Amino acid sequence: MVSRRAPASKSTYLLPSEVAEVLQVSPKTVTRWAKEGKLASRRTLGGHRRYARADIESLAERLQEQIPA
Image (tube, rainbow, N blue to C red; front, side, top):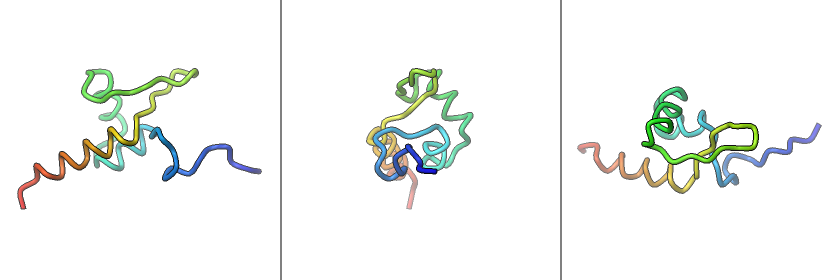
């Protein structure tokens, strides 16, 4: 069986679980942040949230910079 889903490294949009892994939080936290407007997301035709890879990587970099050395 051939997978139709692009590898995560090639995808423009991330799943909540992928965002959670990048930001080191739970997927439920990612969904809550999206509902609160803290994370921008798009909805699929099925109603699932997807997050722009560039936005998440930018946020992860900004958060990393805030951690004291």
